[in-house]
Amino acid sequence: MICSTSAKLPAVNSRSLFMRENWGLKTFGIPALWSLSKGEGINVAVLDSGIAFNHPDFVKAISMMKNFTESKAGVYDITGHGTHVAGIIGSRNPKIGLASEIKLLIGKIIDDEGTVNITATVNAIYWAIENKADIINLSIEAKNDYPELKKAVDEANEAGCIVVCAAGNAGPQRNSIQYPAKYKSTIAVAAVDQTFKLRVDASTGPELDVVAPGVDIYSTDLPHGYTTRGGSSMAAPFVSGVIALMLSREKKNPIITTIKSSDAIRERIGSTAFQLGTPEDKDVYGMGLIHPQRMIV
Picture 1 (cartoon, rainbow, N blue to C red):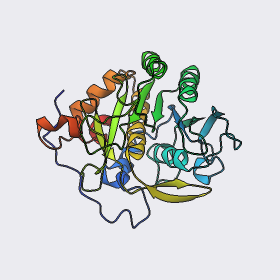
Picture 2 (cartoon, helix red, strand yellow):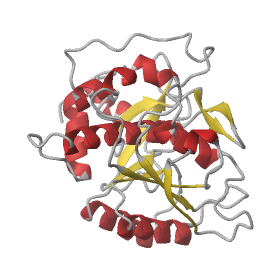
Picture 3 (cartoon, rainbow, N blue to C red):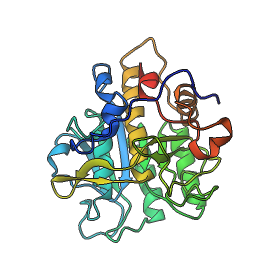
């Protein structure tokens, strides 16, 4: 796939972190897209460590919740990871979330010690499929291949769910993409900073699809606050949010044929992305830096 090289990179917004906002919003011109789409009609399943469901940013945002672990806290988030991820995608705060009118399906698959349960993840993926998720965000990473996980991800893709995954933080060595991002039926995302440099520990390899903001990302935190986090876990939801805006925009425009497969999304990303590095750097930057405006307008 050919990356776009004709456009200039977005201007670096070095002040945004100190202004206490998600710097990716202004840097990538997301507010300008909200007149076209805010994610209306799109269901995004965030399969993670749960959510601080009483956070004011999630009022009327959550449509379903289910705990797939043995956590005594139920679906409530103990680690804060899932809350941060969900905020990037669908916070109702215009300084935090990309797609403020999506509906969130929250599946808790990470236990209160921060361990990913593969069986819980598989069950949650099927739950998301059954409940008509348009996008599944998996900001998790595993070193090993699990056939049951691959089967679930593949079936989600076949059902029309776009599966967006964190590539992992196992770099800087090459060929370090983690599962489930390593599966071809997913969109694998790595993190860049505000100067569009790859995060130092970012996983790279031939399975990488795209890079997105994932360093010093300001988003929702426990119990009602905000904090900064970094890693591909934060880059993946940025891409999920952009895809949600795009799908919502296309649903509202009968002239446009709605894209409903990871292969088609990958093609759109590749044909619109900002190229970073040289063509030989595909293992490092994938198809390039996501370009929300070209994807959506």
